[in-house]
Image (cartoon, rainbow, N blue to C red):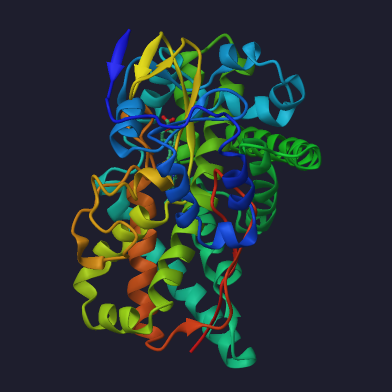
Length: 421
Ligand code: HEM
């Protein structure tokens, strides 16, 4: 047994957390989950989940789990051990288990290596002018709508399209397909949620078929006319890796292209919307940052800490262990609570204060260890660029209505943020 931490799991009642989970999914809970997260933290660093397994709320423990070699991501072998077959054998659920985020070594190592350092410094610098240009166009649209209607929805006008344009241009995806990709991505995500309903799983099943059709066809077309783009490079790589197995190469290419695309969309859109929401909710903050643009990166980082786009991720134990005094049997699932961990007062003083000048507040928003997010630098570039332009162009931007959120526990999703000037 490996002891990991010694801080105290207090609650042993598996049903204690049910009321918190119910309220978390409500509109009020989505708009401000942090008081509920405090209730969860008060139950301990390791809180039993009603379906077995545990929620982990402490920053230190979450960090150790993400980086620990004895913790694995739920993979196909894990999936086949689950007894709730309706949930875990659903095709939409299984589809995601061939993606990087659900693979363990050695397959994960090989696939991740094949991508190299996706968004290293020079790639991000090469992408900067395009991102600047996209932001310019989108803010034109925003201004037109504000002039015509007095208010506009920032999510639909800017936050959703910007990551789509960015990844779409990088993969050389035709712009006329962007709306379709955004549409099936929003619908597919239910299968990746913690407690999807039957009807949500059915929605995901249909969108999974559309998603597979779309990316399979994209790869087929690119193979027929390869060019000087990232996807063509991946095709050349995997054709060399598997010269006698074209179907196998195509399956890997499908999973990589599909996942890199969808992993970049809602996450970044939520960061952009939360960033603007947190700043315009307090007009003095917006005004201060406008006069101190040298702190734009700090504002982005504090938003990532304060309200991460992904609030929960899962791992399972590869061996019997002990977490904060709680025995964890081999194969037990734990839910790493990014949103709770980032507000742990033991690592961030006054964690519920949004403080641009906090200076390097600790956060786990991009995960950790071998699965650390491959797109962190790109997301930061998009957020920085958008904010710099917004502050300059809309000095009096403010909310026109309360934001609305989808009822989610894993992927935060602001569905509207009406703004005015
Ligand atoms: C603010 C935006 C984003 C957030 C908050 C975010 C967050 C995350 C998190 C939490 C993980 C899982 C880490 C773990 O399991 O330890 C992850 C993995 C990943 N992300 Fe991101 N992400 C963002 C944007 C992006 C973008 C823009 C891309 C690509 C263009 C991307 C591509 C990926 C990929 C490919 C993985 C899987 C890595 C692996 O399992 O090896 N992400 N991301």
